[in-house]
Image (cartoon, rainbow over the protein chains, first blue to last red):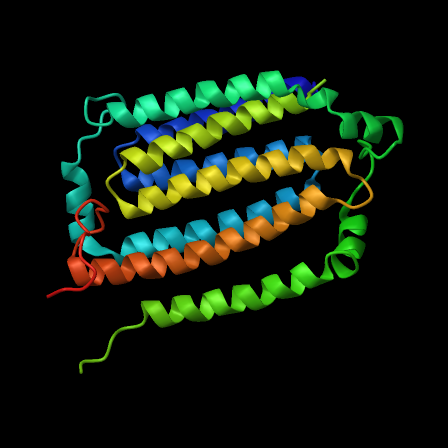
Length: 180
Length: 102
């Protein structure tokens, strides 16, 4: 059952990512990206990371995609017209080099992954024998909260300051320039 | 049983699709989507490995940090794209080849 769910989720994720890559229409590819992100959230749940899945839905789907849609709407009619001219078949001569690059990269990465044999790594075997593995019927939210306030307190604070700086910087960059 | 290799294969596929989008697309917003795909592929790997770290939750924690950093990056990048559009009237990365308008 879980395995079937995993295959369905990974099929949805990879398929919609393909449509994002192949789509001619920018709005359609943005909305297909929604589906990719939801599929990824499902994969996170299957990897027993429920909190990360919820955060993914809230921040990515709720925040980033709305932001991208807004920027797209603000960038006006000419951008849309320029998009229509761009006839991009998925495998055309123009993006043949990109296709070759991505394909060869995929071959290399698959090779490495299959050779690395991740489930047989030493620390993973140790975690399995030492019961340091997340059980299926236990929620990790409690543990994440405690860890965030003790072990990872410094990165947490640093990232909050950085987030504020980034948002102020974005607002500063996006403002209308006054006439000099 | 879903092993780590399954997750890593899915993540490699996502990464390569993102790479393809970045290299082939002629629109800065689509390039940004490709970058987000690659980031998500990396986050998927961290989350998958985090199953074997129950006490410290290192992978999940840094997946959270990476998601927040992606949000910050996207906000800044979109502001830059808006500025570039205002100045050049195009967001094709191939045509933006000057630092400042003469």
